[in-house]
Image (tube, rainbow, N blue to C red; front, top):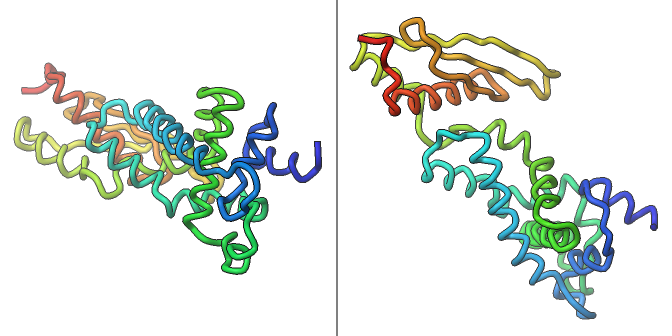
Length: 230
């Protein structure tokens, strides 16, 4: 195995049993020789959507379908995928035609997003869905952890309005854990209503942890877990 390929596989988090899949994934249609990565991009798009759906449903089991769809869309758009490709330095490994090379193809967001998806498609063909899902999880773990409610429902406000209307109570949030280095903090918050624990949330800030806890509490109330109130 070449040192270059080993370095790329280490960055990806997957060692290819069939390196020809890797070569195709890195080949832009402008290269003009043999297969290109368009079909692998198509496949990788589907693999990514399924893997991200799995991850979000596991992370936010009480979230509504509409919220999950919005979160997934914001996490796998072209801008985000291009950023992931840059983090992996994929532009360096692209096989481009001369014209695309001159036009700065190695830095084009559309090409970078496409090669990222193509690589996921190649990993799926090389080792199956579970392996591809684990790669997606490794690449997006921090993004998923940080993304419970941005741009979606304001669970804290919604919960406060509901509990005051139903029980004349205001939710109480308690930070129960703070860990990790400054650049990668992890906060765990619990929420109690009338002295009873109703939710627990995790996030990379106190705010996101509290929003996640409020989301759980709303789901618990929706299931009718109100026996300690009234």
